[in-house]
Image (tube, rainbow, N blue to C red; front, side, top):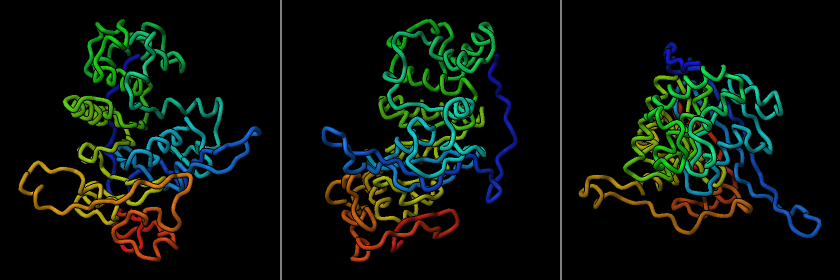
Length: 338
């Protein structure tokens, strides 16, 4: 069975673009249990009412501080963790209502590239067995056809088929991540969640992996949710960017809008933390310094959850939750003063 590389018709632009994924008011709360009888005394609101869409063939970057709920959002979308409430609709299929064999039938269409390429690969399996596992599970061809597919996948991600019988520990971190990418695209999915796929890699290797993901997207017509805390890499790969803070989205816009005209104070703070290559500009540009630590998701602040660290917060920010609104074409923000 071979990997087909035919390029489909170009994705329409503007309002006619096809929506592949719709996420509406998605929540994931982890219960806090105490006592001998394990009584629920609270909940960690890891994802707390997230709404967005991803168009077919695009990359949506999801950025924010560590612990803000980015990875949990990706896992809940793929139903690796069940949602507490809300809707996840992938290509017309409501995933939150599916389980068992019904959900398993949709697994080939949605895959994940994990953050740690060492922990996500079974050290007791060869590269060939790792990539072959999803093909076997979903009955994609006979043994000879699958072997041909594995060789093509290895070539596609920049590895030699001669290394198919080696084990993960014999490869570098970047090569292991390529193996994980080959496994993720083996079933030719439409949608791939990339959960900080470059965070565990050397800086010299990060650009290679990002360029590989971009080339695979062009060849295989993939749609990405690219989760990262590296704003410079997100700018290189993403078409639109969603900014997350304490389980909620605070801004979503085309990538150039987010970088050139950030409206939310948190987005402005993230943007100002990215160093510029020009030392003169770096020395004179203004910086937004946030005070304090990110609050606990088990006890988030009232009103706007960012008001405890916001440099422009006023009294109403602690009393009233800002509306998630579209301030210009495709530019959404959750701030009273944006």
